[in-house]
Image 1 (tube, rainbow, N blue to C red):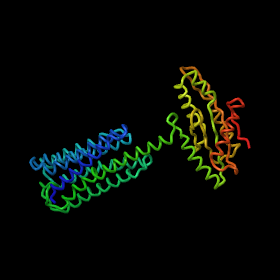
Image 2 (image 1 turned 90 degrees about the horizontal axis):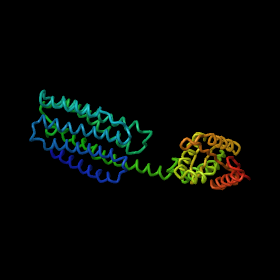
Image 3 (image 1 turned 90 degrees about the vertical axis):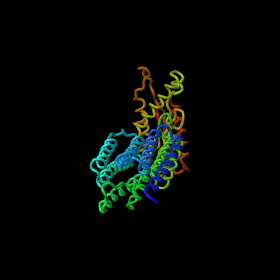
Image 4 (image 1 turned 45 degrees about the vertical axis):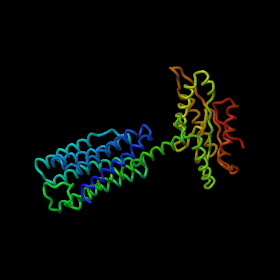
Length: 387
C-alpha cells in the first residue's frame, strides 16, 4: 500500500468515526453537546488534512503541505477545546496561536526556504505542544474525573507524542531531499505517519464517547442517590450507608447513632406562604443541618420535611448533645420572606446502636419513635429513644 492509499484509508476511517459521534451526539445531554461538537470539528479537520495529503497533488507543493498540516494542527486544537468545554474550563487562545505560528512557518519552509526536515521539526514541535496541553488538562482532572476513558486518552496522546518525537529522530538520520513531503512512498516511515495520525480521531473518538457516557452514568447515579430539592443524599443512600455502618458497628463495636429530624409546623408554613416558600424552607433547613453536623456525618432527606443524621462513633449521650447543637443552630438561623422573619425550629429523636438491634432499621425505628415523643412534648426539642 502506498502513502496515498494509507491517507485515503485514514480519511475514510476518521469520517466513519465522526459519523458514529454524530449519531451519539443526539443522545447526549445538552451540557455535553458543545464539547462533542468541538470533537466532531477536530475529527473533520483531521480527515480533511489526510485528504489534502492524499489528493493534493494537483496543488502546488507549498499550498498542499501548508493546508494539510494546518488542518491537522487546527484539528488538534479543536480536540483540546473539546476537553476544555467538557471540563468547564475557559478556552485559551494558545492553541490557535500555536497552530497559526506553525502554519506560517510551514509555508515559509516549503515556499520560500524549502527544508523538509525543518518542516518536520516545526510541525512536530507544534503537535507535541498541543498534545501535551491536552494531556496536562486530562491529568489535572484526575480528582474530579476518575474514569478509565480519561486515563485511556492520556495513554493515546502519550503514544502519539512518543511517535512524533521518534519520527523527528528517524528523519534526522535519513538523507531526505529538501522538497520531500510525507505523502511520498520514498521512506517507510511515511507509511506509518498517517496510521498514528488516525489514533486520535479513531481510537480517541471511541475514548471520548466513553468519556461522555461515563459522565452521563455518574450523573444518573448521583441523581438516583440525591434529593433533587436540597441536594442531600436521599432515603436510598441513607439505607445503603446505614446498613454498611451497622455492619461495621456490629463487627468492631464502634458506636453508631441515628437522629431523625422534623421541621416543626411545616404544614402551616406551606398553607400560609405557599409551597414555593415551603421548598425554600426545606433547602434552607438542609443547609443549616449540613453546616451544624459534624464533618463526616451523613445528613439525608428522607421525604417531606423529615431529615436524618447518621453519626458514627457516638454513644447515646454524645449523639443527643450533637443533635441539640443542630437544633440550636436551626433555631438561631434567620430565614425571611420579603424581609419578614419566618421562625424555623426542628424536633428530633435520637437512638444509638444496641446489642438487641438486628439491623439498621431497628435503630432507625427507635429514633423515629423518639421524634414522636419530642413532638408530643411540645416540639423544638431532642428526645432520646426509650429502652
